[in-house]
Length: 289
Ligand code: FES
Image 1 (tube, protein in one colour):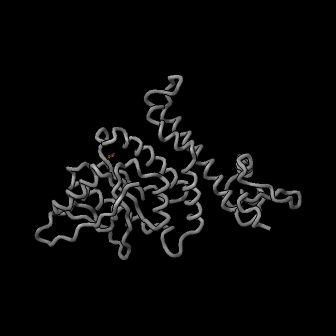
Image 2: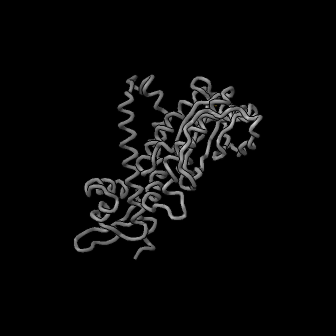
Image 3: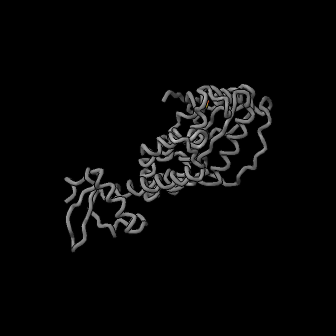
């Protein structure tokens, strides 16, 4: 990804700064959200520049990363930012129809939809991710969006996986969701969603948005469970019943996913213990006694 960081403009003096947008400010003290803003080079980043030169004020909580197009922002990277300590993430791009790469921001919409589902499944509030279209002439809108979003994240509080004492279950679930995001079927669906809903598949059959949403849900859940199973069988062999208990799924669901993982060579039968087969992550098989 081509990117570069951009410092937030220096604070203006009271006299020369324009009035900031009216946003209700939280009374909550002591928490300053860390917000990462991925801004497309051609519109939102230019909007941020205009915001600065026009002297509109906005909170300094945002760390800007410039990308050539908003669609370069991968779900994997967003989840990585959360894992690394972000409390909120803003993705800014050109308005629909204005993307300098024609249809880039349509793909961005699909990617953000997918990422929100991944956040939800991992237990992080999807409100921590925001997508906005901000053109190069919308400096004031940039100021308003950042101010509003900072306040939203402030109200949500610190990310539960951010601190030095993170919620380990949530963190593990976020890793699993991040790994799930790399599944080739999800990638293919995100890339083809617009074509499938507007033009149809190879048989000229249009796929409804509901059907696409169902497909997303199924693939995400399958991959998420598989990665959770691989995580918890890394250090010790476990039975289907134990795995089901730890990850909060039914033994039937776990068994179905174990069959797939076994077919892919990712999980191995370690031993039979009291008539119960114990499975272990194949990569860790030699290290587990
Ligand atoms: S170039 Fe701005 S969203 Fe694609």
